[in-house]
Length: 408
Image (cartoon, rainbow, N blue to C red; front, side, top):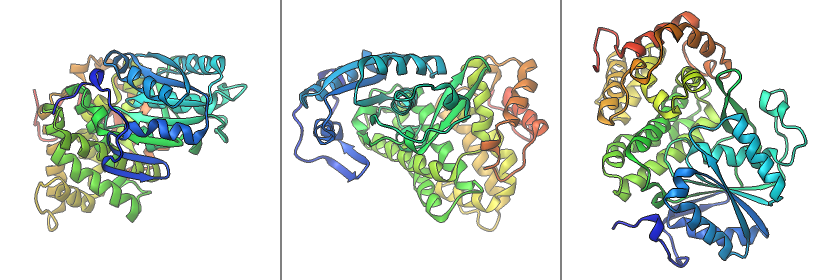
């Protein structure tokens, strides 16, 4: 069945297919239609819908607007997001929110829109926001309600306590972290992801896998976080290719939606590591999409850091259906790295930093910036320094793994 968002005009169903409902999460096909009911529970009168231009063009913003208004709630829209968000854009969203004096923010879109939505909800009631953006102060309260509806399966922003923005002055990405960035409600409807184009599906999907594998080997991992990450990795391997190359396959979309949520819960508790640390400077200076940067760096980072967690690599190889490497964990590392390496061509993603337009002369600067992202590097079970990070960047620049294997 093919249904475009522009043509959706259904009444709220009495039951939801594969529907899961817990206090802060609604998951299931058509669960977006629970939005009016949820707004009535909040007893709000005015809402702001935050999204991006692409989601607006395919009709999703209008569809959500109609659902909001059906609950008797007055709604306005902020859809200025194009590309990955910056602090400048966040300030504009906060100014807009203060002007309309809304009681609830509804974010719909990928990680960029959701990060802007939840950060705006947390900061719009603050007199001064600069200390929160610089990290001098941590957000300790939120008076504005927040509901998030993801349209991609990757960032896990709907279940995490962080929001990432480009710092244009420093040419680097920075994170705002607070439990008050968690939404009051996340509605995950896999139907909303079907309009996601192949490249975005691939990049966001590998981003979710990065959350799973990095949190799985994190020094802060626990049996509980590993359980979430394990399930996410198993679902990833069986669904990512179908979701990218046959986007209307709803079962694969459901599977990838679960990958995003489960990996997001794992990363929110165990943290991510070196892949993200090395990806942030690429986004800050070159504006490389976060998922693309993560996907490209994954094999090169794990070729290095995987040496200190070979037991976990044998387990990951099992989850990815690469074989049983229990008695030869070092071979498991090679198998996992090559799987991640080959995944780039399978999903038609860039295969080297050079292909992304990164200048080789900039690699030392990028390595220095990445080496200073301590909050992520300390989660990694391998002590990386500026020199070893530069080595990883150089291999990723050429697209060549140890032994000379190349995708080019």
